[in-house]
Length: 193
Image (tube, rainbow, N blue to C red; front, side):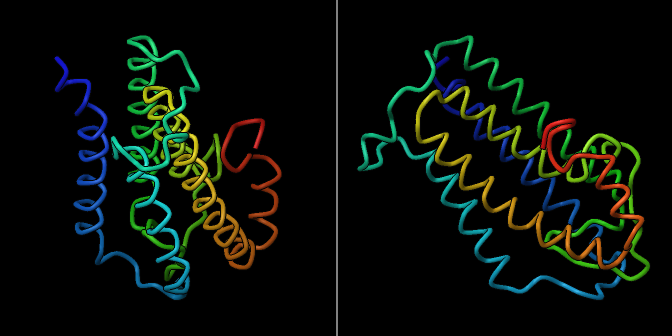
């Protein structure tokens, strides 16, 4: 049973990442890119994600303060965290599927780019980011340690920077249509943020 508790979250995230890679390979021949974010931006985001994953997975980091308990822990936190993670990542997958050929790993403007406002995009403008952040929140709840919060902050910072760039490009591409959409639909959390 200890193996189950030790490997459930790595397995959930691994399945999500493998799916993400496979679906990217299948749709890589989608619409041609007209504009793509700078490599430095993509590399910085990758480093932030790798650091967050290392924080969550490393059992013995030299900074002991990272292991301070922030929640009571136990089975309730573990299963609640697992449910939040699966639901969050499922939401990200739904958004990815809904975007179809408009999706890309990095911030891009595609040839014949479409503004998608249906499906999960009715709820938030960046549902993939919302889902990934929810996945990290679930991992933090299950881990119940300060290192999870640090990992979540790293991922939030990386996605927030990506979101701001994407927002600027979408406003440039779709003008008033995007402005109206942004007034109506929150970026990450319905009715809040």
